[in-house]
Image (tube, rainbow, N blue to C red; front, top):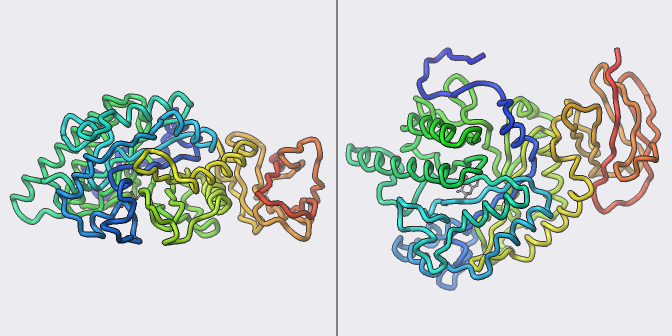
Length: 445
Ligand code: FHN
């Protein structure tokens, strides 16, 4: 039931979780590859010999590069090593079921030949449509493609951070028409797109145009039925973002978790709606940065733990990659993709199509539950030196048997030590990657 205590024209367009096929597919994907690629990949965080530690895609701002100079990087954009099929193969091996690509980041450069601007691949020496190649190659591997779109635009002369005069209002209206047209163009020309991922919507200018965000959501869903839109797009009549003034989530899923995850003990409220977290491999680099020694670089196991943690709370995990200006991936990213892919190859069924199990978090790791089944996965990151894994079940849930997923014939001993409390006996051993134990249960009286 929609809570409409405060009358709104541009609030949430419906309430509750979507249950249609497109949303069910989005939810079952669980693991995605984010790709930030644009002109910023060419300087890679270095300007005039100086390395800037802040996010590489913000170099224009960090190094105070004049717009004309930055924009002329377009004439250097010629990624000779770009091979969409290779990218898609790597993604497939890593185990992702979707990929989200920056069609246009804050700098305004478009990876497709948009008829509404000259600032695109079409004006670069490379010339060809990057989006089209990516959509075809990833779709051919069975991977959904989603489009990231920055509403904030440092290139467009009509972009405004705020509306402070009638002139601002006129200019910004032109900008909003431009962005609306581009979005319609994307939805029309790439009909297999599954979701739009909005960003750069935090400024007052956008907050004062909740109506536009409402209309964009509506238009995209008309042009591309079933398409999914993240909460970042939206503002309501009063400029309230993500959730409207009545507390209803706007868009189809919550997209606020960036470089952080909800706490698995205290933040279980997130399991009530759809959500996605996006994550960088270094501390805060989305675009390609030449020097990754500027911050901590997460290990494959740290990232894997985040993926499992996210799945255990009913969310999707979008792991970011920043290809080089030549169009290939740095070695660190390829290595991470390989390690995660090897694990996913064995244990992916503990991720895809899995959800929150409704159980208390235990110190050994995370539960995930295959939808509509009587099976739990225990993904164990902290192997116990006691050889005992504790499981506390909700009332009425009775454990039947447990085994390693890769040794299903060998049952592990399950001992009931008190009402709804069990110990599973496991070998005391040193493992170098998280093990998955499958547990069968039934609902008792
Ligand atoms: O400023 C951007 C950043 O470059 C990156 O695109 C992330 C991805 O969530 N979004 C913005 C910061 O919220």
